[in-house]
Image 1: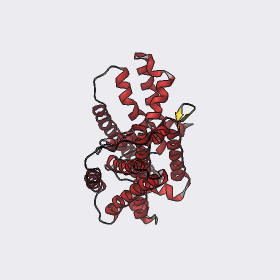
Image 2: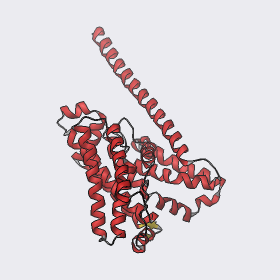
Image 3: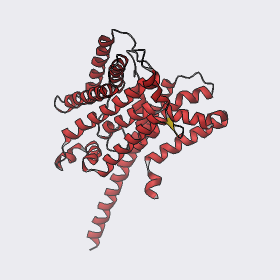
Image 4: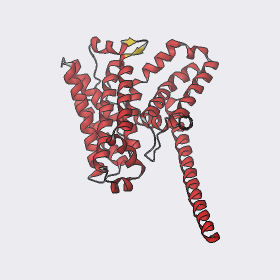
Length: 331
């Protein structure tokens, strides 16, 4: 019970619940079951993006190519589906593109020694340019109604897409908590020097984090096409900030080694709720502004908590040494 109460995910979940209740007091319509289900279903893209990003942040890196990779996967798969290609081929193409992007980012980080934020920033720029060349700067439209209809299918009010995203997140949680390779992500993110001394394959682990994230981004792109019904050359722009904010809000530390996919999923639900909350509050504020402010506040708070934890650890060690010294003198 003590471990549960200290869980960062529980704090995030409590925050979301309290916020929903407060908004419900102002406008009771927000807590209507149909609105809550709509909010949940609308978070599916952010859920997948946040889950993928969580792998990278927990391993001690950062990825700002999230929106660009998702946009490329969405663009290519949408154009293939529009042109009559079998859906399975389009899905495979999107997943392959996401994985290749992850490999490129991971290889640049681990072999070329380029900092992850610089590497992924450069990758994002290249991908955006490729999207414009691929589409000629035009929207990808006229997606078949059959494919768009999938986003409307649901079970118990929850869309099939969200059930699928939830299954993917659960699979990711099981990998990170019940497999040796999965636990490597947190170990590498917590202390890369110690992980190397312990024989953990640091390069493979970090590249693997980017590859897994790329697959999550591709899945988000495929669902984005079905939900929206068209793709613009700037699709996914700004999603990287929302994905990172969702992770941080869900208790994933930007310093690496701490956090979970469950927390990232909770954070994604909040990110998807911001726009709807503003509508129900009749607010003219921009959700990107709110997201940015929250990201800054949470990062600062996380840094202060980490510093406090470090100071407590140092104090505990000093007291232990002092006690040991006193015991030796008395003897």
